[in-house]
Image (cartoon, rainbow over all chains, first blue to last red; front, side, top):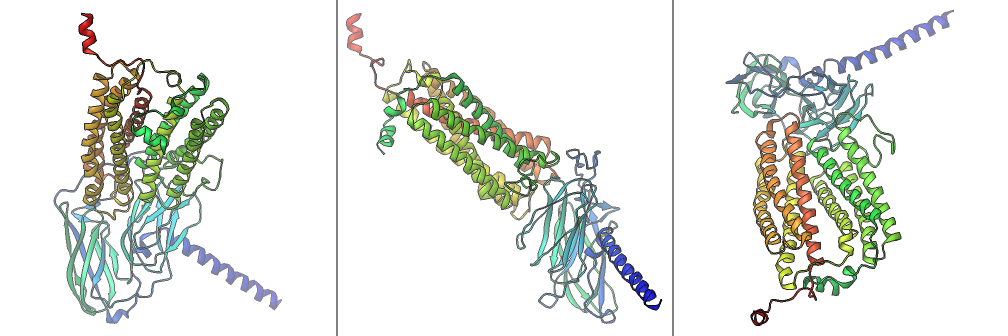
Length: 256
Length: 345
């Protein structure tokens, strides 16, 4: 009887382990921004600081034409808003904020968990993300449309792979740092995402309320940069000390 | 070599002008059909680039792993796969043209021309495949565009060479002296049209690949300076030559319909093409930089601009060919003799 009980317990343990693995995959693909935008920790929290701030948008917000997805019956059939410029109450979303200068040179260890881009309603979600060199980059789909995932880098290898509905995720790695690599879908020309390939984990993407936070930065003086797909890049000097959050607000406008 | 030297003197080599083959209406109509389909193929290819769908089917020569199975014709697939299907059809029909020509046409050069067409169309298909497999590199994509229009001209020329009017002795001919400027300027126009084609195709493919609709690695002003401004400048030279040839054929050679009609069409197409060129600039460069997706106006105008460009090249080739055909020193071209006219009076 004892061997039987031991065998049963072993089966239950194996079953639990495999279900945890399954949950992890779906969790990765659901909130696509979680791994993509939050950097991995590489310094002791007690000895580190952070930078937080808001991306403000000044002036009139450009009116972009809505997207027509009717070319594919599996995509939304009503006009869809463009995500190229997302401004809420004067705050700009989808701005990639990163430490441009001040960190020791070289490549930091990338996290083993993937940065995930999902395809939902014939859009890439999130639109802007960061991934470290060597970190798994995973593309999932929740659409019934046929997609083809096509990043267009200049320093990394280009690839173009079809992803049918219910296909398993495509997993790749970027090998060289590169900013704002455009991710296209040649089935749906409006589909666009921007992948920033970094050597360090100190980056964030501004949320719909324009806020961002970069955590666990070693104390020091840095050049912080904020880059937007339409409005280009802005930089500022920021001093970070342990346990004392630094503030950095950026102002963008239609005229850059 | 001898033939080339004679052509420079505006003489039609005998082996070209002799027509031992009788007119075969079915054969000729078939060559016309293939030339028309080749033009539609050019438009289908233009639709692929204008819709930014060049890589919608990522593999080649298969489509999603299949040679014959038609994928769902949605999204970018409908443009890319339609282009492939029309291309395969035109390729097949070109082989039929070659086989048919070898069976019914006794002209040796004509037979080899159709073999050249088959090889050219095959090469064009391989270029299309290389474009897909290498992620639409502008150099190969541009070559694909240029060779495509060249093959269209070859197929149009084959249609001319099989026509009744070509096989019969022309009723009217030009003297070599008259033909000289016409032939010389026709060749010049072909040269400038090729330059125009390379610049236009280069702009189109670099813009789509590295410009705003693509990776955005090249600043727009760089693409415009390298390709678009020279394209616009060359358009002026092309327009000048078309005006000259059009006016010359309509005034000096209006008695020869096979010169007058292409000349007239050149003028009509020029006006249309200039308007489409301005339209393409507006929708592509002025409005298109910030577009999230190709608009109907952008697709329509750019495809039409490319199509009319292909027609201008083909009409110029036909005009040149006909100019050779209608040149000769001849019994029926009598130089004006003033003393004889005076004596008669």
